[in-house]
Length: 117
Image (cartoon, rainbow, N blue to C red):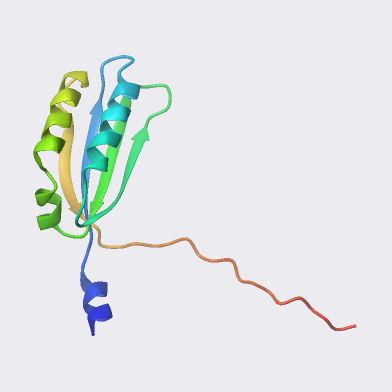
């Protein structure tokens, strides 16, 4: 029954959309990696996207629950965010989303070799 209840649990995603000051994306990327490395319980993965040729980006961080997401906002994480804040051109837009559909890539169908002559 545990597998069934696990199936019913949805993941949550913290999403931040922002733009950094010119030339500051690389520094922000390093700080993002440091912040993500502090995550423990409930962390499900993180992505940082950059619009090519710009300092605009989107961060998406997946969690197994809202409680675990909030629990990981510890002192070390806050210190890293304080270093990152001055790099933004303006305050990023942030929100939390519930993952309601997940479609993994399909697996190619393996075909047994034909041994008929």
